[in-house]
Structures are given as C-alpha cells and as structure tokens.
Amino acid sequence: MKLATIAGSLRKASINRGLLEACQDVAPGGITFEPLPIGELPHYDEDLATQGDPEAVARFKAAIAAADGLLIATPEYNYSVPGVLKNALDWASRPAYRSVFAGKKTGMLGASYSVVGTARAQAHLKGIMLGMAAPVFPYPEVLVGAAKEKFDTDGNLTDPSTREHLAGFVAAFATWVGTP
Image (cartoon, rainbow, N blue to C red; front, side):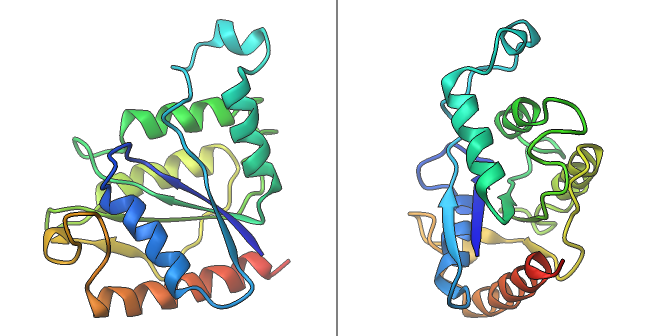
C-alpha cells in the first residue's frame, strides 16, 4: 500500500511533518509513504490553470493520483488550515468533482502547541475534503495538543503514548484504505 503525505507547514522542524514521519515509524509492514512537498507550488491562479498545470502542480496531482490513500497533517493557524495547505488543495481540486481527490481515501491529523490541538483546523479541512468528494477517515482521530512537551526541537515525536495512539490510527487507516 502506498500512502501520500502532505504536511501543511513549510517549517523545516515542523511538528506536523514530524507527526507524518512518526506515522512511517509506527506503520504496519507493507506500507510505503511518499511525502509531497507543497512549498514549490505557485499561488493558485485560475488564469494559470486554464493554460495547463504548471510542472510542480502536475507532479503533485500525479503523486496523489498514484497513491492508495492520503494523509494530511495540518497545523492550526488562526482557527483554520494554513494558507499554503489550502493553496495546494485548491490546485489539486481541479477539475471540480473529477479531481485526483474524488474518491481518494484521506486521513487527517495534526499537532499544535495549544491544548486544543488542531480540532478547529481539522474541522475546516474535513469540510474542504468532503467538498472535493474525498472520503474522510472517521476514527480514531489524532489531535496532538500541548505538542511542545511531545516533540523535540527538531520536530521529532518523543512522547510514547502519542506514538502508541498514532500506531493505532495508522493501522486502522490502512485497513480502511484497503477496504473496497
């Protein structure tokens, strides 16, 4: 099984990128992960889109299409998803309802320094994904709050109980993705 991953933060030591890397560490055998960079994508511009996808966008869309499932780790910026993540989703959401997201099983997770975790950002992300006809994994959820205590300064997940919960999430998500 091949899972594409998108970290909604561009920061080198991103805790959300670290969360996705921890997914790889705790995943059952037989799963490969392909991180999809979003920092090189241009700002969405419908004029550009009507001329054909820029090369970075075409690669991004092809990688999503080739994956069996998609994991998105989002930080929470101002009670929502970061603009850079929304930009990437906007590019890949075209053509509407027939994009690479249509039918693509998607899981979401997130880490934040706040005690609330990324609950509000994930609620917005769920609405965005459902609007693109992407089925969203319902349970278990991964909302890592107080992340400053659970990640080191390089963005690596160090908290054993969070790793254990993440292992259950990845296993359940993989089972769901593998179910027709």
